[in-house]
Image (tube, rainbow over the protein chains, first blue to last red):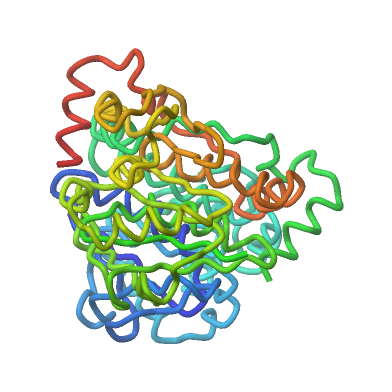
Length: 207
Length: 207
């Protein structure tokens, strides 16, 4: 099973590495970071720089693609090479997935028309511009397209996806291997009910 | 505020990128991946290769260090350059932290004698060999040393640590920015109560 995760400048590292880790722990799964050309790709914080080991041309038809989000999505929407690769790869994928604002790139590739989909809470409504029905859920499955809410939701999405690509027992074993028994120190991760000043402060941290 | 995350061969990517993302979203925080020498460092799955941008010598006294774990910890325990850097850096850090088996590296640096500490559930008991009291909790704070359970626990740990390094409101804003409102699809992330065959299968995925 071959999973491809495209990287583009100013992606958010956890969007990519959460699903990468979940999938790469599954037996028989290979996960490859791809980009316009192989090499390091700068993330949104300037500190990460994951390395793509293949170009889009090297990997035209992976079994699954998972598109991360990040502040760089805005510019990536007009990256015809990336958006074109997503659209062509999707024609043959078993599953096509996104994390956070990565769903906008699925939208730009024309994959979300008439579909339920999600994204980061800060920009969820804008999915409608791609003909999608924005859904405020953490993980949304519509046909063979799976979209996740912001950043950390990629971990929940990847476990959900792994259970479908493989089986629930494999997903449960990976969840235990990565000890994913979350216990956030604050009840602050959901925008629903968050005070306006906290929402503004959170959005300010992203840009 | 300068955070350093050391990378060594066969670290687990999410151990490093979970805390990296939390800390790098905080205003005024800089996070640097360090290694024996700058350049890509292979992770445990062969697909990631985060890039270290500084050497240990370049960054002897960061404010905070966060040591990731992974299958490579076993060999890293005899990496005198890494263990020596951890010990010397700790003399002046405000906080010294670890994720997963990274706590063994704190132990090898002599930092855990007489302290409560945690690690991945699969190897928790072995912390006693370093004079530590193994504690089956997700995040353990003892003095200015903070240890986290396996892999994904680094996100909870980093939010806890950020609240102490900065303040709770900053940690809450970051939690909302990365939409960390976890909702795992299975109740399988804790070893307590997990059937023996699932535990064995999970450990088999790591090695």
